[in-house]
Length: 168
Image 1 (cartoon, rainbow, N blue to C red):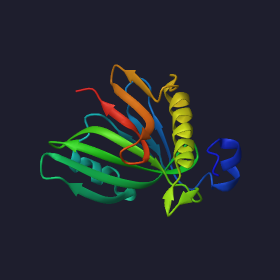
Image 2 (image 1 turned 180 degrees about the vertical axis):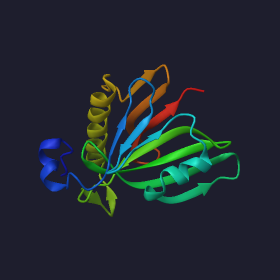
Image 3 (image 1 turned 30 degrees about the horizontal axis):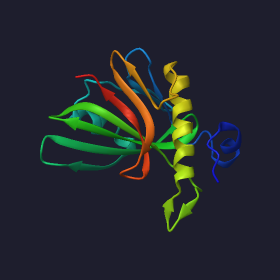
């Protein structure tokens, strides 16, 4: 069983390997602190600028050919734990960001994560969001003037779902 609390995982996962990803509570902007700069992902980010700004983290892209395009990035960290994020663009403009932790050892059944390990990831993300955004995530979601942040169980996908959806 993986315990996502910082006390247990701090010895299991390297702390300084990936740049820190944080969320600004005033505007929902994402900051990624690298060794030589602070990268800012803001709600007005355009798709063609994202790939250049975040080139060192870029993994892939999926164009749904209906105005929605996802860009996938890896190599950041959330509260010291390896993480990735996906940017969702509609008509070229950023509308939401999804986050995911990269867990080296989680409980599985038939090569799928157990619900308990997924819930531990969600609890960890809710705690991280609560600290970063100065709000309670007791119910897995918080509303802001700039949008919504969430971390909760997705029963349809049987996975953790977490991210930011910017207000339109």
